[in-house]
Image (tube, rainbow, N blue to C red; front, side, top):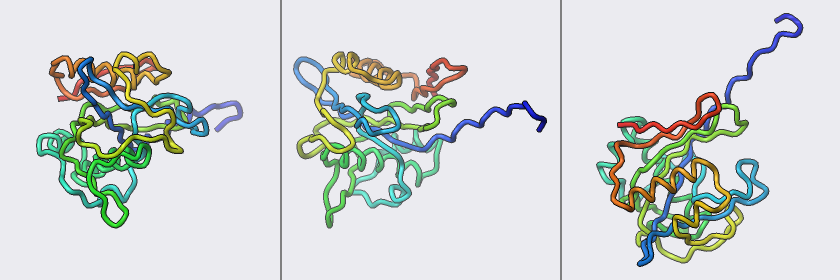
Length: 212
């Protein structure tokens, strides 16, 4: 390479991740559980998010009480192999337990055995290519009645609270979180999506594409 030539840096490969929207229905409308990411985080510090995190290798083989519903597994299986589909669902439930204390499943020998039967797959998102830290997140939703225990702050998520959907939209949130909240709003109002939305970026602009 000649002096002065510049080679564009390759985008960082996104890490697989999963997030869980826990929906609580109230007479006044639906609420979701959100918390503020700790200030020490390199990725989106002090931003309000749903519980979730990175897919761990162990998630792919974690025993569960109940598997994903066949329709949910089939939709995910169009994109990824069975072991990864299992792992993503487990990661959403495991991270929720670690970050909030809520249990979706049963405890055995001090470890959570997830119950995946109540999960619904609602969206996925990929962090912009120019970010130094990137994630490919799959968003699941579950009814709060499937969760046991009381939500409490952790070292990962602070200021945990149940929020009406409109209130969540007024918090400091990322654009993808805003989109997912709006997607949940539409679903709770009776809207049937044409597919699973992919929230991604092209030339710096956010794009939404519904996949069949």
